[in-house]
Image 1 (tube, rainbow, N blue to C red):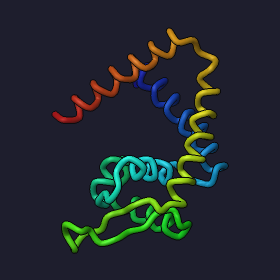
Image 2: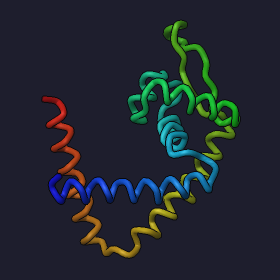
Image 3: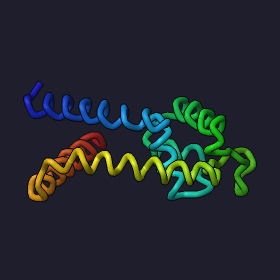
Length: 141
């Protein structure tokens, strides 16, 4: 494995552990946070679109939405355009909960990145973007 690929993989894993632990302390899984983030931007989103936007498979998404419904944070309803499909929305409690958790989580991430100056962060961002664009393009072939 090329050293850069190994370091990228290890860094991604370390970040996921770091961010996931904090989200769990706040009462959400990373998947729930991701789904709620999409739902904050897009009301009445279909399950298919929600899964694609959140980067979550259909089977995993079903369990996440089930748990969000059990917590009173989201609800499924029949699509007004197609009665055969469902749409998902956040409840009022879900919107309030997400805003509170997102504020705490983003402040937590900001504090973690505070050890880097703006020049370093800009360089990281540009490098990550190049990696992402390369891998997205390469996966289409």
